[in-house]
Image (tube, rainbow, N blue to C red; front, side, top):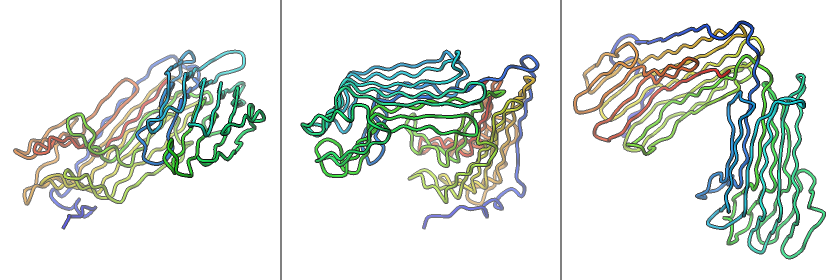
Length: 407
């Protein structure tokens, strides 16, 4: 019967929780540093949105978590495929930030000379674009899609060359499409806008796209944040496992950000995690909280694991946290912390070592690294525990938190 590891495991082994904290505070930059804008955006040729299909975003250009108003990205590809079928030809994507008379913002554009689903649908000269910008504290956005020709079956439909936003059209033999999906959303931090030339909804069996799958073709997003002392970055997860360079189990309870949460606490939890032939993990959750503003930007991440069993190891409650902040006078603060309740192999109890990057060798079983910290001038990350399992040639990271500021 598979053992269940929970908070009671914290009482096994050492009597008290051993914690390790790391803190660094820096004063950098000039007083009353100028606020920065944050720029994010992407353009994608095709993106499968449902079902099990071996195709992620294709022909992607992206800028992410940057304060550089000159940042840009461009991508070209002859074709974009879905399910081994060519959906779009002569695809170009382009995303760039700007700071000019109209304000600070991002524009994302995607084009395709030809979009085709066999003889069911044919779109020529497709172009979709969206822009989000801020000027004098006011947010704006635009988004649109145009076509040179739209054919449903063998019928040309000229009224759809400049389709109204979110126009739904039935396509016999496929299901339906939505043309010119477009919108804008104001957030606590700023504004983002999105546009998609066409979304293909395969609701019936066909030879081109698996039934039940949605495919967005020419998908764009543009996002800009209000002026702030800094952007905030970071992430947290409960566990991750790798065999050599292969992913055995991706990050669990994963969270990330580059703009904060508007000051609220976001929590992502899992009841338990079973990594086949490697580990059994009890209940786990992560939290993130942060905000960006003209006087101070900050972010806090944390990771909490009730307990984990790896090989013959039984490890009690594991926690980590990381925080970063910056004030308008240029001061930056970083700190991290991790705790592990207990370590036990059979009836033998092992000590939880303190200090950064401390190691414990358990002969023939595993090497344990405690409080693994990576520190840079404006970024800090901590892995509460890293387990190298000899017999499985596997590395398991438990309790990861990271935080930083940009700008």
